[in-house]
Length: 450
Length: 182
Image 1 (cartoon, chains in turn brown, blue):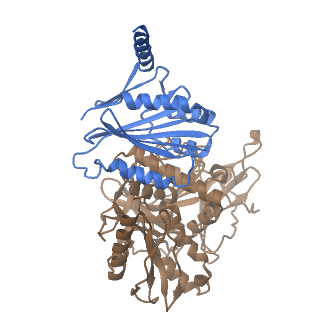
Image 2 (spheres, rainbow over the protein chains, first blue to last red; image 1 turned 45 degrees about the vertical axis):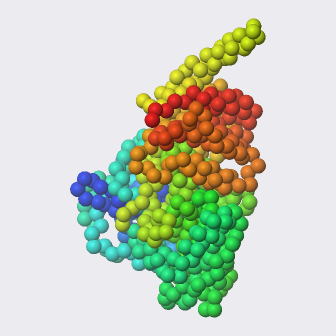
Image 3 (cartoon, rainbow over the protein chains, first blue to last red; image 1 turned 180 degrees about the vertical axis):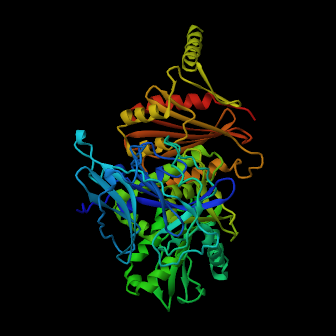
């Protein structure tokens, strides 16, 4: 019998790209953290409290590791911060239930379906592509606590820990996955030291002593890694029209104390010829972006604007990109146009202490966040408040930081791997990806040399 | 003359009674906290904040992610302190740094009627103080740098709105007593 239960909501998940160094070589993994609905309790920002290096002591949910090509490696479940022990063996009674799976939305990364037995439920990680089940991985089993009235309700039962399968090292020559993907994953944590354990110091490593992967056909991932994108980011910033616009925008912004900005419009969908769009003035705290999608005015794939007070990119800057996905001018142009937009959209924020460019790596997650946490004025106030808190906390912990960097840190904390942020010194187009180094509370942002 | 003597005695007594707890944040940074100060753990800070601030979500979220080296409870005020040495090759943290921070904070708090900020010099130290309210929680944040910008102390004071006077006294005491070596 199928329970039909979905344990974790997709929008409560975050994926990160891990590079682990065992002292001899690097292994790459995709780490997906999925939080329990009850744990999130309406505060989606709690997802950011758990990373590979640092785990929220109250975390309830599951962390799953995959190879970059999508092969499941292992999973660990937590309930109220405590690691759930794996089942004793695959031959135990609780593993005998035959799984029946439930469909998920087309191209949605993961949902976990369940199979009911009187006392226990086996949970599976089902992956779909175009509504077709392409893989099903056993994760773990949860059993009802009879004495306490049972815990098999998938919405609050927490996670479990899989019997650790043998992980593997993907071949060094594995090409980047195709664009028509399944996962949207970004932001590398450079050579973190696995901490594991069951304290609150982080998450267990994917698995010890990985072996080479067997060759097989897997679901493709989209890994819009910061370094993979950086050449395109630099190229656009160095474009003569964009560079001239940016120079004028920064100059006007700093000299007047008013935000100036311009659309970044390409002339057509096949090249990189930019339209010399007008530079317009906003107010001291905002600039209103436009959007066109035609051959006359060009196709808007981004914005440049200045922040006169030196503050970094804001949530509104990020969501200005996401909001365009529901602009009827774009949606009526069809899927190829939407795909082109998603592949090229970026927003540039210029300040007197440096410039920041943001790209979206997980459009689905950001759209979900826009709808659930940045739609009403109350939601906007809450998210902006958390952004300000994170920025100020960063400055309280890093007395030499700029407010620009503090804002970038706050965005990376809020949106995690769903965005990439690049930084360049004022007047430079040598953008480099930003990452967060260290554990929460003592972490700092730094640039990666790709 | 007697009145003046009494005033001097009273002032001395109040300073003595308020400043008997020297705290060393590092070998180079010292300050005083009032008698009632109590160094607490992260769990204690969260428990105190949960009860005192009615689990204000933004406050709880901030404390949960905070560096926990130096957290104190002083009366009903939560005091978080941090210090760091500024590297000699740091070219950005100079005299204009606080003005830039103030400009940024003022912009970040644009539209918040509870927010105010002030830049001042106290005992040759440059200080920026912010004051604002989140929900039912009052905040003082300060960023203090010595004359040559070689060391800094930052602090966060969180308190019930009704305890603002206590928080203000504690803040002023910290800012007056902090001592940073060059």
